[in-house]
Image (tube, rainbow, N blue to C red; front, side, top):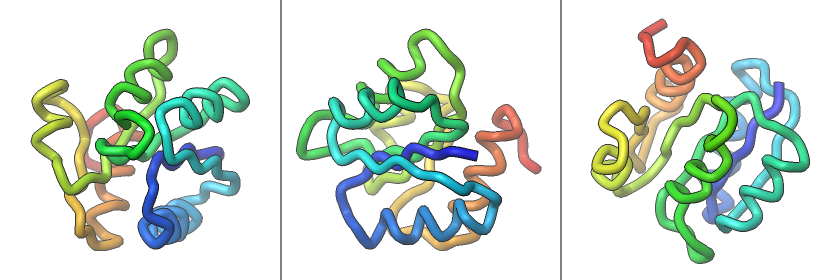
Length: 118
């Protein structure tokens, strides 16, 4: 399975990638800007997206909106500003930073199970 991680902080990227590997993901694209995220998704459609909201080069919310405009991809927002995701989409699956491995994995499970708890 392939995941797109939209994040700027290298340590957060490592933590997310480790959790995803534990869940069976085997390939990853990393993007730190809106444009890079959209390009990565066009190059290879991800099975899951994790996205921070605030990026130096745009918005993770906008990048996800553009990527998911014509296809359904499970999304977990991993952010220090969870209210921003919920303002745009009340049903958004959000893991607040700082996070624990268990809360990230639970969010991923919800996203990949259609928003339902595992």
